[in-house]
Image (cartoon, rainbow, N blue to C red; front, side, top):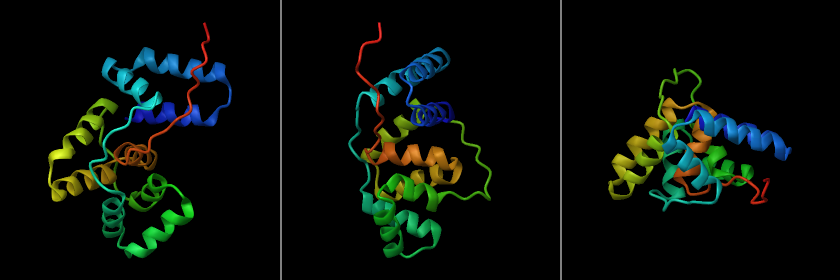
Length: 158
């Protein structure tokens, strides 16, 4: 996941098409085949059926951060992005981040949630929030909420 998050951040930080092509090329040369497939799918707009509601995510982050729900809701309203809001509220810089799962493993975990009960969903999501960096939590939240979007041009460069 770290590798994919780094790619996302670098793509977001540049306006240069040539630089974006180089970043993608470097990612594709070093990532696993499964991660490459998921990266392409996500970048062309593949979305998941959301296994949890945004309300559930807000309730769980409120519980985790010991904040009232209304305050989480207001933070979301002001920030305008639930993934970002949760990343700031869920991240705890006092805990060591040692989860080393790749993108495809995390996507599989998300897909497996659809048939689970809410307690299991909550447990897995909070596990990720507790063990990912703030940037990784942001991307994880975008994936789990079905709101992952990135601008990749369909223009042909060959």
